[in-house]
Image 1: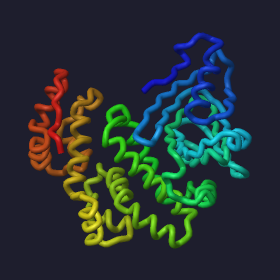
Image 2: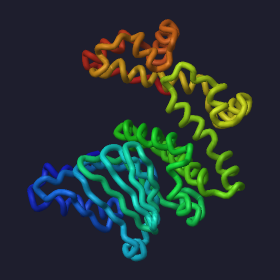
Image 3: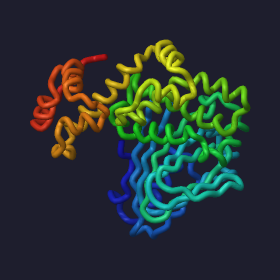
Image 4: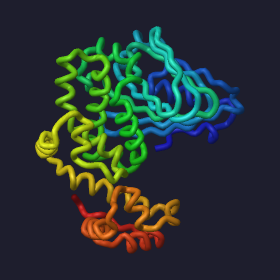
Length: 325
């Protein structure tokens, strides 16, 4: 949902408007713009997904700060996960400073303050939620901040957050939003303890978040035809038997889950004008379907129409609703 586009405002109001939104929604205490008022541009979108707030910010260079003075003065106890998308940027917390590039993830703990900046045109996708949802000691959260860039779970979390942003308009209310929020928090929890938790905490959180990590890994590799249960189990240092038991206990049929997510991706591409030049078989292969007959049969079973009929109806502007799961 669009909250602000400074191009819609008159000169003299643009910077002040963005500063007000950044302070009210994100707990920012100051914004230093790289350009003057006449050439500054900011666009901010925001979604509430259950207990999460998701932000997408684009615009000209800036430095945003949450000072320790403000952190001590207010009661905002939240964490923010920031996915830097575009532009040369940087992040600072306590004595830790580092440069960040596209698709870098950083964790901001609001009670500790932080700095975040980019130069030139840049963009970021960020999410925020109450710290207590992590169920981790404050010292563990803070100890993780300087070393999270080395976590093997970071890539999973980045893909997950960006995927959530792509469908935010469709799932910003209802049980889907709550379920997605729970999975997101679990991934952040695993991300933190992977670099800062003690052995017992890592093992405990590892067990508790394994299904979430398995599904996040699977979603990130959906397009690869060699995505098998054996590969998924190997990637998570477990056996195929344990993987199946884990999914069964979580109410998930792994093969059916993979096929359904692939079908959803192929269905969206078949309806998208930007893919109009691609054949149906090419789109199916790009989503991991190596057998055209199998793809067509499962597509029809799931959506009640063939891939070619769906593409034709989509071009005519007629929308078909998929059956309930």
